Structure formats: C-alpha cells, structure tokens
Length: 91
Image 1: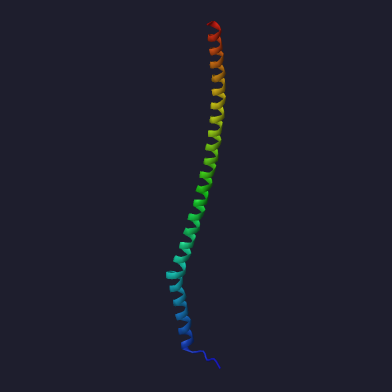
Image 2: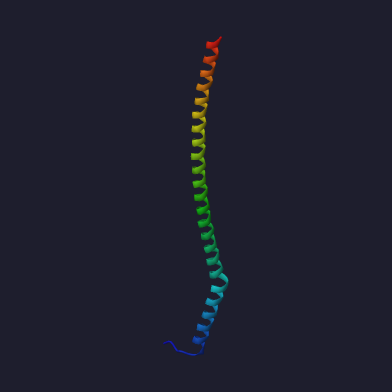
C-alpha cells in the first residue's frame, strides 16, 4: 500500500524543480529557436515573392521597351527607304 509521507512531497518538489529547470534551460530556448526559424522562413518567402513580382514587372517592361524599339526601328527603316527612294528619283 502507498503511504503518504515526507518523501512523496519531496519527490513532487524535485519534479517541479526539474520541470522548471527543463523549461527554463531546454524547452524555452528550443521553442524560441524554432519560432525564430519560422519567422526567418516566412520573411524569406515574402522577400522571394517580392523579388518574383519585381522580376515579372521588369520582364514585362523589357518586352514593352523591345516591342516599342522594334516599332520605332520599323518606322525609321521605312522613313529611310522613302528618303532613299526620293533621292534616287532625283538623280
């Protein structure tokens, strides 16, 4: 049969002290490390998404500039051909 004496209370006290020490020096630092890691991963995902959006924007801008340059080059080419035709007609 179990007898309740001073050793039971001493064991409970030792358990509570051990639980406090483990929480203070083992579990809390590990949980803080895990939380910091999750925050870093989330920040990295946000930064990657921002860079992706910026890249898409720059690609679209580059394509637009290229398209406009090709149109301008085509107009300039037609203008030069017209000028060359006018000059050749004069001679």
